Image (cartoon, rainbow, N blue to C red; front, side, top):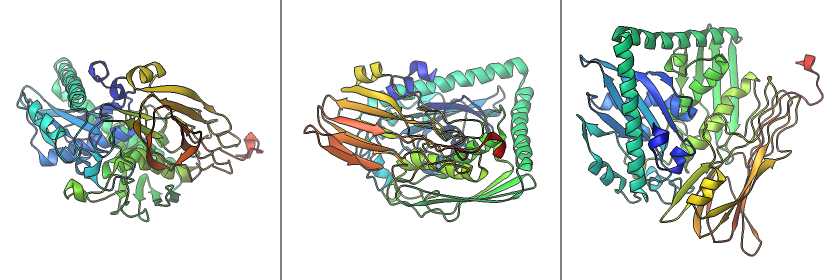
Length: 496
């Protein structure tokens, strides 16, 4: 429903949205197979909102605030409670969709040089989009037009929010039909059983991993450390992120919801069985997330809160590879979403660019795909060129960019876009300096790079997180990283 009724390229074509069902306690029960960085954090969001606001029949809550389980400001979440005929809360249907424009210092709302939350766009504290069946569109419009950096595409925002609301209403009706057919007690019973089943599968998986302490460290391209100490004992797991860097002075700050999303995703990978992603997976786990890059303070005014847009898209990827690293099951993937954003006062565009997956004990890494925390499409060339003043001139596999190994890492891609009018360009990426690691003596993947070919033929190199004005006729090139290799290239299969 959300895909069919939305109007933006980012939601309708790129599928940058997620839908899920949570129970009456705000625990994630089941979800569509959408975007892991969204899905694992939706339960956190609902629980935070439930602590602040009363949920009643006929309500729908809207928010994008990082203190209430938000990921970054472009991701707007709608929460619709579902009640039985006796007004017993059954659960909530919830969706989160990325709006390619929500204000901020630059078009497409991911300014590379932002230093505060306010600079990244419109901050929506938990509020009622629908209150007792009465819509409040005028209020939402006022919010989108508020602040120093209001949205540049309010009508598109409102259209996509109406699509998101339609999706939640559709989900609410489907859940009520299930209750009518099976009975309320049966539905609640099986919600609980799904959670218990996931918790038991997680315990079984942890029992099959040798007890011990597994330590891991990765560094962002600017040197900021990501550290994890994973202690597994008797079917339980403690993860301590002490030693991770302090609050980032740029936009590479994550939120507790993002960290939760990464952990539940990685643990789901370790289970390696068909299983609905739900909060039961987290029952045997305990997280320690000290104040800092993974747990900033968002209690102040937006002008006082740290910027977070890169924490959602980039730190989530790097943290996933940090947690996978000590288990030797998979080499580092490209570890970035390669966020490309451009626009002007009258249009905003956002895409993530695919790359190479790390090889694993199962085989070579895939080439030219999205992976881990993102699960979106890239825009089709026909739609990209029809909707925006650009021309796609090159899109190909970056041969040789995957790391060598017993199993070879996947290759990244090369993508070139020519601009047909002047625009503001932003990139948020990682693994431009740090190489994606190989595992068991497999070789690392090649780091990525990006640059502008100016009208005079000169090249302007762009850093991992960077921005520039690009002129009509100029070309933007991005070379995405390859994945790391698994195992020594000269080893034989029986040597592992």
